[in-house]
Length: 410
Image 1: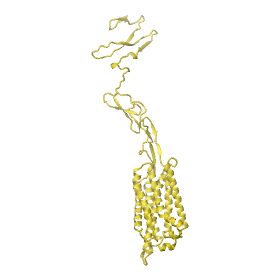
Image 2: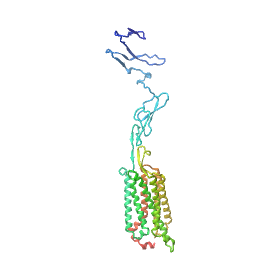
Image 3: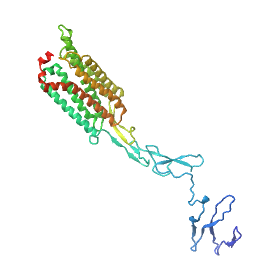
Image 4: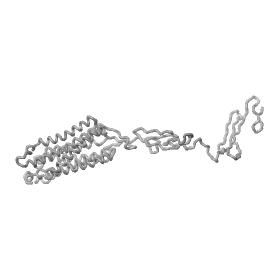
């Protein structure tokens, strides 16, 4: 049996066994308006001599429209690379889209991704947005930060210096210059300054809940104890000057009761504020994952901001009262006058902490802790230097001035 083709030729359709015999020729034709482009053979599809179907095509011989050499793709946009995602620009054709980079903190690790995956909170996206990197953990480390070694050395040095001065005052406790400036208050002041220097070590290293609570409470109480001692010293200077006149009512206030009461009352208020702080909302350790994209900061959360600023504010009020009292008493007779040294020391103390507030609020991470440590070291060093170094100079290098006769003559 033969079959007629469209062109009018005939060919055999079935063999003698009734099996269909066929052979297809694949033509390449480009449809263009008003142009007759001749077709040409690019392949075939037929039975082989073994009875198997064979498909053959020469892709290099295919001619595409506009003389394009490569096989056209069913899209109007290139593939989006890893680190990018698709943004459809047409509501009709889904193959038309833009490729935009993943946002910060997101990644895509496959081509033509329609969405980006957000990294975990403890990781951040690499700059090419193809994978996540674990964030570094930051805090004032003893081993990795030079500034920690500097603070540790300074704290140890000033602590040993305070112990040395305290030993000198204890050894020379019966000399006129030590007794004239209320030796008991001097001992309390030196002990509080020494412990304040040691508090610096609570700010170094990786913070935990215990150190977060102790660092703020101990610093607030010890600094308030130091300022209360200075306030009691200043009040005693004023009373001592007024009590020199015969029959003056201020004579009955001379002794240890008044300075002890001033010290106890002023420091007790700060202790009560700190205990309320710890009871209501104690400071605790937290991870700051938002300040930096590539690292996490291990820091202390102050708990209650109201309690924190109450403790800081009370210390500021106490320092201001002590400074004003010492400033007004600075011109009293030198025989009993320690007020001018207290004035200088409180001027240093107030200047340091006033300058610390904007610096503390404008920094973040471990540098906030460094600013606070610097303020503690500087303010306590100012108290130690302005009040006790002049006395040590007289005790050690000018013993002829450390006599009752010399003090009374002045």
